[in-house]
Image 1 (cartoon, one colour):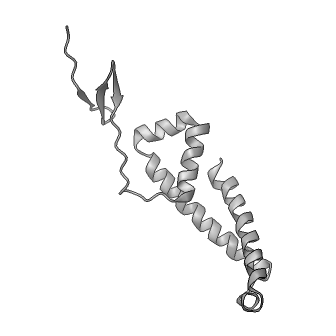
Image 2 (cartoon, one colour):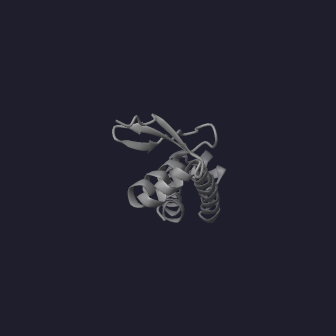
Image 3 (tube, helix red, strand yellow):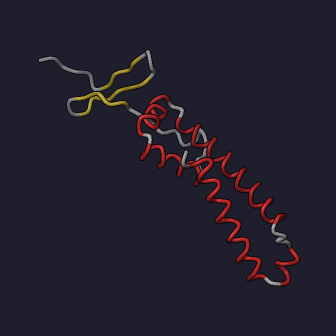
Length: 127
């Protein structure tokens, strides 16, 4: 009977493999310290995993997934902030309105945030 190694290293792709059951599976370690992934990055990661599993797995195995998700998260957050500021200016939502009628200001800001988040979801997350 041939004794199989419990762990292997593939020099071509740089991955380590662990013997599990009857198969060698990639021994992937998620490095959380590299790039923080926020709300938008996690949302895009879920979308990729559910709708584009081949692309998701290719990025995961190549080690590029974490940096890609962190980049998407940063871009989406910057775009969200920009859209909110622009909508505030366009719809004349000012600090004076906030001081005069807080509930109206909150209602209008919530409306802006919802619309801006929908734009970010369609432009960055679900594509």
